[in-house]
Length: 428
Image (tube, rainbow, N blue to C red; front, side, top):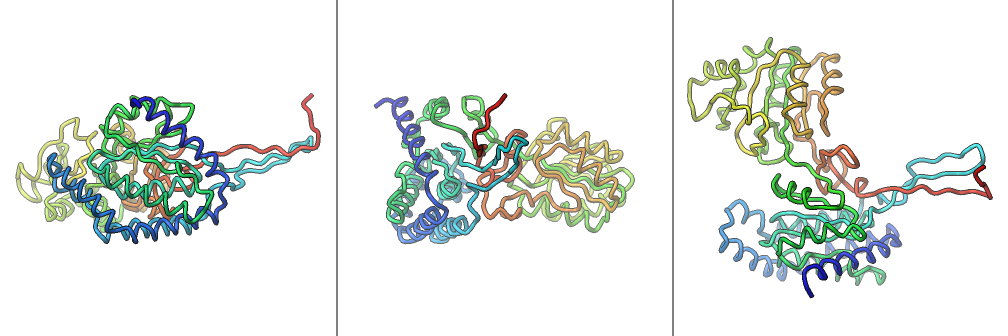
């Protein structure tokens, strides 16, 4: 069987499974998820043996220590996967909710109800725990899922999926065996073939670096939900509580700099820059944050910690567009709220941005003017996360404007349809 035939069979199987999944009740889905969680724990030894093969492959092919750490599955991480499945099981079922209801003058009753999307392809890198997370969220929302992890995690991904499928079949006789599938080949050509099958595949969600997401979006013929990067900002307004601003800025940059909702650019109103920036720079220097500054902030930073090229340097134009995922921070002094909004809308990635101010009018101007998936007033950008938003689980973050936007949980994995209830109405 050639690659085209292999991918077509995978997609056809997923489409058939999606029809069967739509018939499962919330109780049946939850029973399957709980059985899957138990099975992952009971099969921890076999999962770690498969993972050891991937670790060996990764080491031979020069994966960094950080990537190897992401790839590793130990008892704690397997327990974490099981815990995640149990958390998904207790969430409200997103399918079948009445989103809108109306009765027309002719007596025709209309309901708008949530439905599964159908077949969802998830493409991701390295971390095999994503296999369990993505599969459980898609299953709970009634979607068949096709999982394409990195070649370095192939054995781990396959055994996790196999364990979940077998547990689901034991828990419920009507569990469709192709509800969860892993692309069985590391061949990169499998992706464009799979994503050309618009008659079977409804949606693709890539998770990973910007290069992966762009490559998927460029080749796909099915809709892709994506965020390319997280160039997030905090703006310290003229009317900010500066102690609060310092805490928010420090948290947004330093609490976990390697994630998409970490701050990459600090904007400071000119009227408070001289008072706010020197102590802020000193605190950031304590975490060895490298600053890339405009002319005004460069002078203030140098007066605070001296002229150290390793710690402070002039910002280049490209820096304002850059997601560092590291202890590097752009700093710019701006003239007022509108200047901050203009900077963010031009250089930002429509992910997460925040204003710190006691001025409600300034806050409302910022909240309305910044065109991002999440906009905050007096809070860190680090809250853009499914768990922090109270969703219980997250399959990704979208910076698209059509469809889902921001953290995506179960509700965002559904579509809807209209139901019409009549008693003989015809249109004249």
